[in-house]
Image (tube, rainbow, N blue to C red; front, side, top):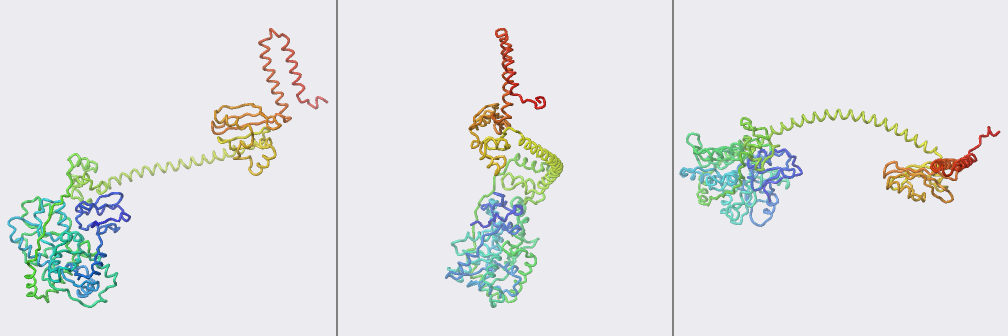
Length: 617
């Protein structure tokens, strides 16, 4: 399981974690901050800065519960910074009693391991023969060098950290089968202890101070619920100062003064990174490095949030001073002599996580995109996590960074977006006005169209001929009363339920519906087509209203008296017109035949023309 994990549902893409990651082991992937496991050094910076608590470190509570429920004795090794964490507990003996109440068989201080380690450093520094070393008590530092400074691996002090040294002491004193749990504020230690698996320095679990507090709460353990209890031996001298800058070396009386000392001690992310780079590049440095990634172990990511550095520092010093008042120097020396021959050496290896360096052209392209093509613009503000804009551009080319991490780029883009938004808002305002005017006109046209539709419908109902309008599926859109009356009683009854037979199937109403289908398909009107319908004779005209979509039909009953006379007169006139044309062509052959025909046709017309009553009287 990875050491650092992200809850993608909580991540809000603030980029804060990316900016503070010294290993650039975080990138945005699938819309959340993704931890690149093989680059992560376990510093825990991302955990402490994430306001959404979207990033967390691997939990060890269940693992510790399993150890405590086993048959083998379990020992808790307390990091010296624990006195700065639990300043809410009045007496350290109450605190020891609370740890025992969880089920631990032994509770010891890692400070004695720090005493042993301090003397190993003294021996190393006194006999360094011109080769300068970097202290390795901070696991995050070891990971940083192994991953990104392979040429400095040989400069790492080959000495185990204090908690591992104490694990070796515990096994020699309390038995090889003893299970060991380290209580520590260091998250990177959770992975670092794996290096010693199978050895006498094996630590089975690292429980952070935050996790320890959770267990106290889960089992309802308070200082009022336990009795005083003292730490188990061996006891430390000055090793309790280990979590403070210079503290480890004071335990072995190593000179750290500015004039005579050969050690640079520093802490904190920025100093940590710069000191390694200068140790690597400045060959006239000629000093050992003693580094903490955090602001001392007292401010480790496994400690409770909101702690004050100098308050915790004072608590640690106060505790060591108090312990020295009853300190047994002679007994301490005997125990130092007893365990000084333990193997406290360790090795390191290069893991080479550096990425290929991009070309100058690629870097320049990124700088131009950021608006940083001028050298004077490339000093950098550091908000992205890189010391210069050039370093950021390199990371961008390597796929470790994105433009949004650059505050100036983001502000520039934001201003551009604001400007575009203002223009868009202005256009939107004009569009709104135009839409309101269009809506007003549309409403007026809708009223006019409604009135026109009502007028047309009224006129349609007044027509003596049957009128029907259908869609492409031969469904009735509208019909008038004359059409319904032409179809008979059944249609009239249906029309009372569904006025105008709207949505009725024309194929079920009339047998000559194919005339309508034909016009819909080919778009050519059919005019004055006579068709039989039962005992009636209809004259049908079908015409296109909307091509291939809507057609209309006018149907007249030729047997109706008012239609019959009109039809006979119309057709007689058509015959006269047709015969006159014929007569003109064959007049020279028929002579007076044309005249007789005209008289005959006129007499027919006269006989069918209604006689004016007044004139007849």
